[in-house]
Image 1 (cartoon, rainbow, N blue to C red):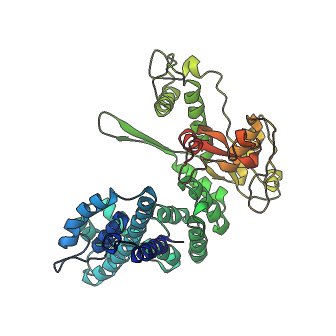
Image 2: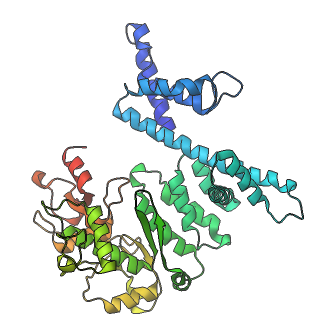
Image 3: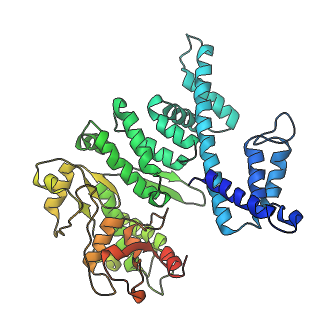
Length: 445
């Protein structure tokens, strides 16, 4: 049931209760959640006084923040969540409308261009967007490119899902980004399948952002014509490290690297950081990871207790594991289906076979051939074994709480049916939850 249907159902329930309640005058007083919804719709759909009434004009826009602030104070948590979902739905619809408007602006700018002027309609439209919205030229060009991509006939499924609120802007962007390797003649089919993956009918099956990106990347490989290995060979020539100055004497350091290299670095940093956590350690996990990266690059070797660095002796003997799942046929060389670095993304067959040849240890993992889902193994004790933890990491990849993308290494194994209540320590009764969501579940949320 969508947000609009839930709202109508709640409205009908309130109306029915109001008609049979005494005294009628008090019963008909609208609840806070309904007043907030009406105020929101007045602004969203342009009701209010004045010719320019709309989202930014008229009495409705001036009144709405006050009405919302007072009405929402009285709303129950479930009503506020429904209201939040409705806001997200409206935002998606506005993104779709903005894309259509910018594309129309590009068309409108076309006839005004002097044939002798070396500029195209998109550039002129970007200038108009930049001036009107007070954004940089680079941002405006990105908005125009995004709008044109969304309004291409092949992307109708994406635009429609945005317009009716099923797809958020973030998920729409993930879908569009994943389409890069898909040839033009297959885009329509890819976008249809991608939208279905991004917003399934069952809301409980909506993947979190990281899981969605991985799923979309795997889907794109099914539609791609150029092999992943060939695209990787081109992309690897673009590897680089960039530094961007930030405020307060800080900077942002980013790297564009092969996936197996980046995932190994990430796993190593996590292992080093966790090995240094103790009651006496004042640094957060994020700070420890940053310090580990600095020490790894600079190799200063100072003890972690003396400086804000963590490699040296403190990191010696750290063991970490990167899990790569490789189809048996790919490993044998009889097929070139992509492998996957669990928790990160797809890997071309050639690189996967090379990694397999260098691996010190192997763990055989049987999976469902139809969808690649690992099959369960069992253990009659409270604490899962190391093998079970590896299995859960391969299956769950991240915290299972909706929307949470904490990696498997940062999670705890939770008994879905509590151990104290007779739940077994079997992988089909275990799920990975980050510490925060594990605690919330334990307290009944």
